[in-house]
Amino acid sequence: MQVKQTPHIAVIGAGIAGLACATALQRAGLTVSVFDKSRGAGGRMSTRRGDGWQCDHGAQYFTARDPAFRAEVQRWCEAGSAAPWTPRLVSLPHDLPAAAPTQVEVERFVGAPRMTAPAVFLAGGLSVATDTTVEQMRSTPDGWQLRSTEGDWFPAGAGFDGVVLAIPAPQAAVLLQQPAAELAAVASRTAMRGCWAAMLNFDAPVALPFDAAFVQRGPLRWIARDSSKPGRDGAETWLLHASAEWTEDHLEDDAGQVAQLLVDAFAELGGPLPRARTAHRWRYANSQPAGQDGSVWHADLRIGLCGDWLHGGNVEGAWLSGHHLAAQVLASFTTAS
Ligand code: FAD
Image (cartoon, rainbow, N blue to C red; front, side, top):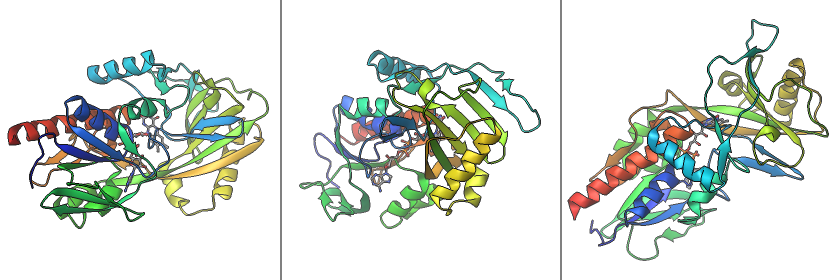
């Protein structure tokens, strides 16, 4: 494969890992094109918006322990795209009737005014093609070409000098099967579990003595008053997440029935009946177990893998994974030139 003077890299996936990788590559002078199948950037850092309400239904908050990620979060906060969130947080264990305060105090951040904001901030400086599902990769003497579900081939001219897959492991495994079976095998080793989410809207503030709770009762594992996060406006909205085990048992159930079961479980915790409810199924919510490799770069094929499944299984890990991969890509192209 010929490498152009300014290498052109394709990044598949505009979640936080892909955007972190793309940003670092572009800053170093490479040309970067990002593709995402969704309407906007953010991936699992996601917000559902309805008539007069909004709700983060994927990632709920993120921590920032690594110094590089802390500096990045500071940048997002200064840009107004993130803010600290200090909910009244409790635990609702299965063996205690009352709520217990959480023991370990952790600094938590959220996107502001919604969880997608950091991704929107990063995507603003990049070339991102949304509504574009990459379903095939092929190697040509001129570089890599990507075909979208709509049948278009990218790029229009000479191929990409490298491809980064910043997508969940099971989706990466499918895409890599034909062009890079060796890497497909790496991705296949990580299983990912689902999570049913329910978003509840209320006409008035819910009279529960907390804003968020780690739950160990029935199907629920996490509940949060989305309206308590900074910058949110609109109706009082609560988010409920089911456990991975319960989700796996109800993966193919009707969304309306799932919403009803989760509302019933919320009622057992003292929650009132909502005015409206919506359920969303995350098929690939989190990896089991999350890897600690950082990222994978195959220098001969010029294909890289990054994402939360390779580093810690959370927002911070996904961002670090993207950065880790960018460093490997840059080292590889510097050596090649
Ligand atoms: P993703 O965000 O999944 O991004 C991948 C992107 O690739 C998506 O935008 C997708 O549309 C796109 N894509 C996939 N296939 C293709 C294709 N073929 N072509 C084009 N585009 C494609 N983390 C925390 O830190 N704290 C939490 O509280 C937390 N709670 C969570 C709760 C839930 C229910 C879920 C689902 C996740 C939660 N997480 C949490 C995990 C966190 O959201 C992820 O770790 C992180 O957002 C993953 O980022 P990523 O870039 O690796 O992947």
